[in-house]
Length: 361
Image 1 (cartoon, rainbow, N blue to C red):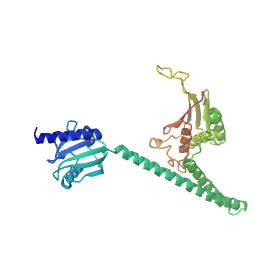
Image 2: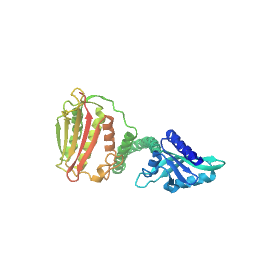
Image 3: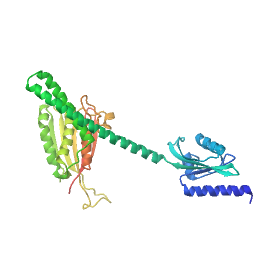
Image 4: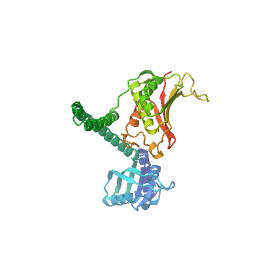
């Protein structure tokens, strides 16, 4: 066996060993700047052809890696922990961790080994963790700011009440007090977004909560000549819920509907129980957990398609004087009850919000 053959076999054995220890990928380049071996993991990460695993020119590698190999041959120094963002043709970008090791023989580099690790998922995870930390700090800052503003508003409100009692500039004070009340409402909504109340769950009847919410909006509906319809078909309607929080969620939906309705418009609230599935493989009746559907539908102006996907985002609103917090709070409350909420709307025809809540058997 010639020295060249022994050297090639040794190089192949080395790459095989590296492949076992580093399943992500390894590349071996000889002193003639030829790629002797590429593991399958490296082929995938570098975007090489499926059959390109050995005896390739160095130019088959991305330019940034070519330069790294040439520099290593010249310096005979290893490079560890190098990060590289690699853009591959017709594929998604990838973030690589690269270790470059020269193999020395009689003081010269006879080969260079590249060990590649796909760190894309780790990099994305770090970005998400950083974003969550940023959002958490932003939430804390928002809550602190809202508390301070609310304290200042209480002082201003007390002063305005004194002005009104003394009949001094009463009209101006009324305007100022109305605006203070509006700001106080925005701050209160912000606090509920930043520090949401945890639901105090108990066994309640969904229809009782809906009846109470409809009773509260009846005077406003009558004043605007809006017809309220109800069709409560869910049976049973028992849920584990916080009646105060759920009432707030339904009121937000009702008030949103009122703002979209013209006089003589209508708001319809319906409930029903999701029917038991009977197809083969469905859950047996003893295992089935019923789900209650609530539909809140109006025949108002509707919502533009481009706005529907963002309706539940905090501070997004289509109203001139809206805060964009009502629906965000509503979704938070429904999610706290292990429920789902969705919206369907046709501009000029109306909007329907649908809520699904788990029921108690």
